[in-house]
Image (cartoon, rainbow, N blue to C red; front, side, top):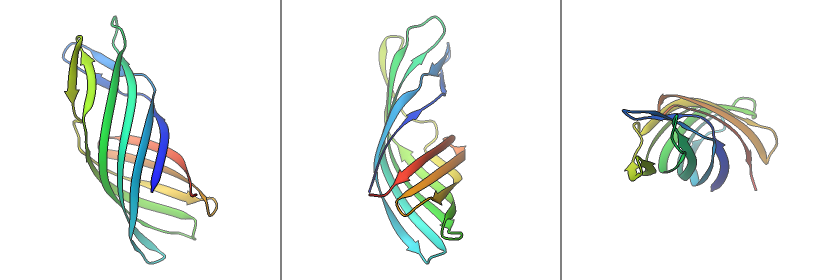
Amino acid sequence: MQAGVGAAFGGSLTTPDARYQFSPGPTALVGADFRAFDDGRYFLLLTSGLSLATARTHAAGEASVGYEAFDLRLGAQFGVELANIVRPYATARVFGGPIFWRYRDEAVTGTDTHHYQLGAGVAVRVSKALNLFAEGIPLGEQAISAGVGLAL
């Protein structure tokens, strides 16, 4: 089981008449993972998560507008454990969920242009309860993320 909070930074939304920049905004996640395979060297982790991201959008000469996005994600991570400390992995995810926004003073509901992610990451075990991770996703919904994990 996992829970997380964080922040999204940057990004934009382009319409036929303007480009809307995103302000930084909070994110939250709850999820469950299942270690389907682990022989001490190779591992396969099945992942799931329900997340929320909120921000404000703004275009030149217009007032800022709220933006909320919900996602249900299912994925897999396949990796190798090196020296009982470093875990590089490949990841694949599929997801979907509604996005709520206002465009020209009308409520708009939409979704992502991509409903998948393909990328790689690395997790580093600092102690039995603490790890660090970084991930880059170049295909599908592009992203770079980093964080700290704490086992309770």
